[in-house]
Amino acid sequence: MKEFIDSIKEFIANSPSLTVQIAETVGIIIFLWLIRFFVVRILQKNVENKKTLYKWKKNTNYIVFLIGAIILAQVWFSALGQLGTFLGLLSAGIAIALKDPVTDMAGWLFLIWRKPFDIGDRVQVGNSKGDVIDIRVFKFTILEIGNWVDADQSTGRIIHIPNHKIFAEDIANYTADFEWVWNEMGVLVTFESDWKKAKDLLQEIADDVCQEFVNQARDEVKKAEKHYLIQYRYLTPIVYTSVKDSGINLTIRYLSNPRTRRGISQQLWENILLEFEGHDDIDFAYPTIRYYNNPTEGKPGTIPGADLPG
Image 1 (spheres, helix red, strand yellow):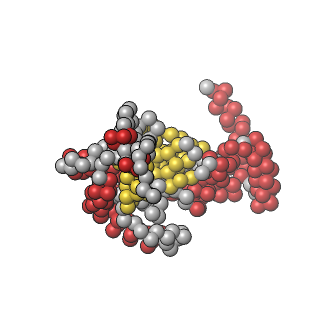
Image 2: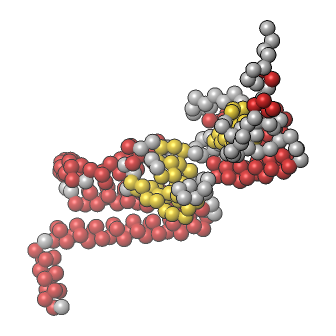
């Protein structure tokens, strides 16, 4: 122990300038840590919204770190020219040796500056999709949705994605600026069903369920048009008709909030099931094996050997 203390004294005696720099560095770090501590305490007492508090705490960390880096650079480098030379050499070496981390930092700056998504947004980056719960210098974190879970609901998994992925992968934002997506739901009825009646019933059900969403979406479209070339002429639900192998497919196309798609789909299906129960001339279709007797079931003009007019 005595030898250790003697070595420290000898170091201080032989390197007074370096000792002062180290002392100043420790003092600056402690001072900035105290400032951050008191700022966070004040924020916790005065900001109730958790999302706002989270952002303020993150921004405080960034500001304190930046100020500390500038002050410490002045302590350890006597002239600005030396600092510039050092940073130039350092950045060149880092760019070669640490390509991905440097690109991650560039991605972080892009996220902070351009904001393709923010905390709380629902996004898809490549094959990963979920709600953004954290953004840091080297990575951002999402709470996964989908995957083995049916519909867009949480799996409970936390996925950490390197920031450089935003330069290499497509980014889909479900909730930024325009918080509505188009969803489609097919209802298959048999060829023998009164499909026109079924289509009218589906249109009534969709209009009733989605009425409040249309009004909300119309207001948001007006806001989104200020930033993007979005031109939706019709926001009301519509039912399209097509033919499948097993029957007539009636597809409901409607607007839905990304976080409530499953709930809206459930509400539509329950109303459809209850409504179709009261109509004997409408039946759901599904893959079946059927023997078709054309002479007794076919149209007169399609029966082999039938006398055709003219």
